[in-house]
Length: 532
Image (cartoon, rainbow, N blue to C red; front, side, top):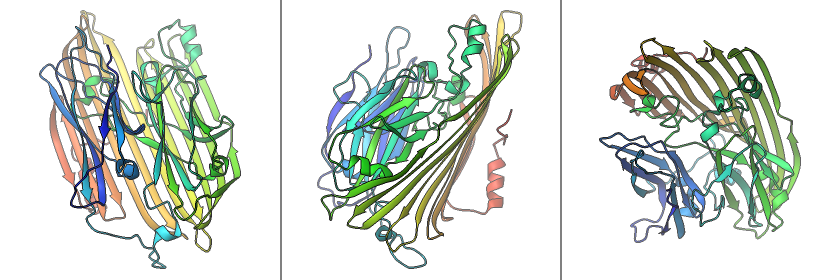
């Protein structure tokens, strides 16, 4: 039996010695003892999702884990009375005995120092030049299911023909809008990146094998007539995924804090500023059961005007360029899938700030290579997703302001299964996983800020199985996390584990020279290329 979501009243902090907060952090602490699967869960405030996460898999002696997430971007929502919703779809029976005990806290930190962001050339506040791009949204609307429910507030997308809809209406003085989308994949599509083509499955009579090939994309539509954005998701591997021992004690990238994805809706404001009800639609290309998708609509309001006016000037959505090349005989073969998509939207909004012209561009590329060998026992997956988007803003009598985000998601998987002929089987697996993002903002060609995140993991594991029981296992996992911002904000950590123990852990919170960083990166981490 799965319990329904927990709903409690939320009230912003009262009687604080300060009423201006510089950072707000959500903290999840949990314990569990026994046997249990990895479970997906979500936290919502007023229907707005704050956190999508996966539980750690417990041991018989019990475990503890915690997650902290910066939720300052939801500032306006957190300052109002709301209903807090938590859903964790756990099942407890004679086999799966683990019960999760959870404590959820929200920490409010005061502003340490008032600091304004200035243009180095003109010494003018950027907020004045580009309103809505250096402050949090004034209003956040939930694009999720309504309570009461017996499960999460996310929409469930069960196949490629399933489009989930949500009605919404925005204030007529909105001058900027951004849709933040949460995505997770489960059951037959948990490992979508390793799914094989349907013709291979049919010819080999593999009726229980998930198919539809390895390509997936989430499409977001407006009023059923136009695609406003596409998402090619990061390949989050949950704590029970691929080989569960990989993630003890180092969890997979994003598994405790699944990433959300932004789509600039500002060019489309001319279509939805009429005071009427409109609809967002969510669809997943090639989807199998099941995908959980919802969104938050962040809105910036013109406080000096009761009504803004918008117009969509250009909207170009080229058809998905998707190709498959299969070469197989029996259970062995190779499969190459490539895809690309480009979207361009241009719109203007008349406000008290003047006429704001916004360009939104998405460029996405995808490559996936799968090889099956040894009568289908050995599988190799080599995939790369490149997810690049940019927003250009032009104000009257001001230079063009631009923000760019270039993401790269490499993935490599290897799995094999050997029969030793004595009733024992050896299961071997390797993985390499990466999340890389470069972000920058410029005005008039002058760089205002830049950051670079490089988060890499790899690991290998070997298990000996007899009579469906693991009689011997050994594994190692390594991770290097490196973040740099404007050359003066840096965080670095290099950690390695062998079986259940951490054997190397180095952390740095200050910026250093590239030569030293290279030495720290190599220490305790076997650098491997993302190739087959």
